[in-house]
Length: 154
Image (cartoon, rainbow, N blue to C red; front, side, top):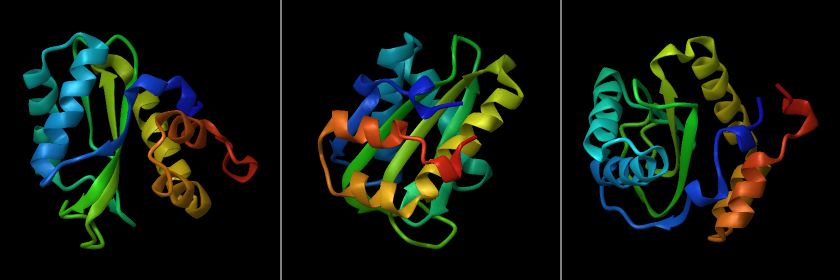
Protein backbone atom coordinates (compact mmCIF):
# COMPACT_ATOMS: atom_id res chain seq x y z
CA UNK A 1 0.00 0.00 0.00
CA UNK A 2 1.50 3.27 -1.19
CA UNK A 3 0.77 6.59 0.47
CA UNK A 4 -0.02 7.94 -2.99
CA UNK A 5 -3.07 5.62 -2.87
CA UNK A 6 -4.23 7.34 0.31
CA UNK A 7 -3.60 11.00 -0.35
CA UNK A 8 -4.04 13.30 -3.32
CA UNK A 9 -1.91 16.39 -3.94
CA UNK A 10 -4.97 18.57 -3.26
CA UNK A 11 -5.19 17.04 0.23
CA UNK A 12 -1.86 18.60 1.27
CA UNK A 13 -1.96 21.72 3.43
CA UNK A 14 1.68 22.88 3.17
CA UNK A 15 1.65 25.84 5.58
CA UNK A 16 -1.31 25.49 7.92
CA UNK A 17 -1.75 28.21 10.53
CA UNK A 18 -3.27 26.94 13.76
CA UNK A 19 -2.86 27.84 17.42
CA UNK A 20 -4.07 24.64 19.08
CA UNK A 21 -4.59 20.93 18.62
CA UNK A 22 -8.34 21.50 18.40
CA UNK A 23 -7.92 24.11 15.68
CA UNK A 24 -5.60 21.80 13.70
CA UNK A 25 -8.20 19.01 13.90
CA UNK A 26 -10.98 21.42 12.85
CA UNK A 27 -9.04 22.65 9.82
CA UNK A 28 -8.12 19.11 8.78
CA UNK A 29 -11.75 18.01 9.23
CA UNK A 30 -12.82 20.90 7.00
CA UNK A 31 -10.44 19.75 4.24
CA UNK A 32 -11.46 16.09 4.70
CA UNK A 33 -15.15 17.06 4.44
CA UNK A 34 -14.39 18.90 1.21
CA UNK A 35 -12.65 15.79 -0.21
CA UNK A 36 -15.17 13.18 0.97
CA UNK A 37 -18.42 15.11 0.79
CA UNK A 38 -19.15 14.25 4.42
CA UNK A 39 -20.33 16.83 6.94
CA UNK A 40 -17.36 18.59 8.53
CA UNK A 41 -18.91 18.20 12.01
CA UNK A 42 -19.18 14.42 11.59
CA UNK A 43 -15.51 14.17 10.58
CA UNK A 44 -14.41 16.43 13.45
CA UNK A 45 -16.50 14.55 16.06
CA UNK A 46 -15.10 11.20 14.91
CA UNK A 47 -11.49 12.43 15.09
CA UNK A 48 -12.05 14.13 18.45
CA UNK A 49 -13.67 10.99 19.86
CA UNK A 50 -10.59 8.94 18.85
CA UNK A 51 -8.29 11.60 20.30
CA UNK A 52 -10.05 11.33 23.68
CA UNK A 53 -8.96 7.67 23.88
CA UNK A 54 -5.34 8.87 23.79
CA UNK A 55 -3.34 11.35 21.82
CA UNK A 56 -2.41 10.40 18.27
CA UNK A 57 0.78 12.43 18.66
CA UNK A 58 3.32 9.67 18.02
CA UNK A 59 6.46 11.67 18.79
CA UNK A 60 9.12 13.55 16.85
CA UNK A 61 6.64 16.35 16.06
CA UNK A 62 4.26 13.99 14.25
CA UNK A 63 0.58 13.18 14.81
CA UNK A 64 -1.63 10.71 12.95
CA UNK A 65 -5.24 11.42 13.95
CA UNK A 66 -7.61 8.86 12.46
CA UNK A 67 -11.10 7.49 12.51
CA UNK A 68 -13.66 5.34 10.75
CA UNK A 69 -16.80 6.85 9.27
CA UNK A 70 -19.80 5.28 7.57
CA UNK A 71 -19.92 7.63 4.59
CA UNK A 72 -16.25 7.32 3.64
CA UNK A 73 -15.98 5.39 0.37
CA UNK A 74 -12.23 4.77 0.44
CA UNK A 75 -9.36 5.34 2.85
CA UNK A 76 -8.59 9.04 2.56
CA UNK A 77 -5.73 11.10 3.92
CA UNK A 78 -5.17 14.81 4.55
CA UNK A 79 -1.68 16.04 5.43
CA UNK A 80 -0.70 19.31 7.05
CA UNK A 81 2.65 20.91 7.68
CA UNK A 82 2.05 23.49 10.41
CA UNK A 83 3.68 26.91 10.24
CA UNK A 84 4.13 26.77 14.02
CA UNK A 85 4.15 23.59 16.13
CA UNK A 86 1.22 23.11 18.53
CA UNK A 87 0.91 21.24 21.81
CA UNK A 88 -0.64 17.84 21.02
CA UNK A 89 -0.15 15.79 24.21
CA UNK A 90 2.24 13.64 22.17
CA UNK A 91 3.93 10.55 23.58
CA UNK A 92 7.25 12.42 23.86
CA UNK A 93 5.62 15.68 25.09
CA UNK A 94 7.01 17.52 22.05
CA UNK A 95 4.83 19.91 20.05
CA UNK A 96 3.57 18.69 16.67
CA UNK A 97 4.18 20.28 13.26
CA UNK A 98 3.35 17.41 10.87
CA UNK A 99 -0.15 15.92 10.94
CA UNK A 100 -1.51 13.13 8.75
CA UNK A 101 -5.27 12.72 9.16
CA UNK A 102 -6.58 9.33 8.02
CA UNK A 103 -10.25 8.50 7.47
CA UNK A 104 -11.42 5.00 6.63
CA UNK A 105 -14.75 3.35 5.87
CA UNK A 106 -16.35 1.53 8.83
CA UNK A 107 -15.73 -1.72 6.96
CA UNK A 108 -12.01 -1.09 6.31
CA UNK A 109 -10.79 -3.51 8.98
CA UNK A 110 -7.14 -4.47 8.44
CA UNK A 111 -6.69 -2.00 5.57
CA UNK A 112 -7.13 0.85 8.05
CA UNK A 113 -4.34 -0.58 10.21
CA UNK A 114 -2.11 -1.21 7.19
CA UNK A 115 -2.59 2.40 6.11
CA UNK A 116 -1.73 3.69 9.61
CA UNK A 117 1.34 1.48 9.67
CA UNK A 118 2.46 2.71 6.25
CA UNK A 119 2.06 6.35 7.29
CA UNK A 120 4.00 5.75 10.49
CA UNK A 121 6.79 4.03 8.55
CA UNK A 122 7.14 6.87 6.03
CA UNK A 123 7.07 9.52 8.77
CA UNK A 124 9.68 7.63 10.80
CA UNK A 125 12.15 8.16 7.98
CA UNK A 126 14.26 11.09 9.18
CA UNK A 127 15.33 12.27 5.73
CA UNK A 128 11.74 12.29 4.42
CA UNK A 129 10.57 14.26 7.45
CA UNK A 130 13.46 16.73 7.08
CA UNK A 131 12.56 17.31 3.42
CA UNK A 132 8.89 17.87 4.29
CA UNK A 133 9.77 20.32 7.05
CA UNK A 134 12.07 22.23 4.67
CA UNK A 135 9.40 23.06 2.07
CA UNK A 136 5.99 24.68 1.89
CA UNK A 137 5.30 23.39 -1.62
CA UNK A 138 2.28 21.05 -1.66
CA UNK A 139 3.44 19.13 -4.76
CA UNK A 140 6.89 18.56 -3.24
CA UNK A 141 5.37 17.35 0.04
CA UNK A 142 3.07 15.00 -1.87
CA UNK A 143 6.01 13.51 -3.76
CA UNK A 144 8.07 13.08 -0.54
CA UNK A 145 5.12 11.27 1.08
CA UNK A 146 4.61 9.14 -2.03
CA UNK A 147 8.24 8.07 -2.38
CA UNK A 148 8.71 4.57 -1.07
CA UNK A 149 12.24 4.08 0.25
CA UNK A 150 13.24 0.50 -0.62
CA UNK A 151 14.17 -0.24 3.00
CA UNK A 152 10.66 0.72 4.08
CA UNK A 153 8.63 -1.01 1.38
CA UNK A 154 5.39 -2.44 2.70
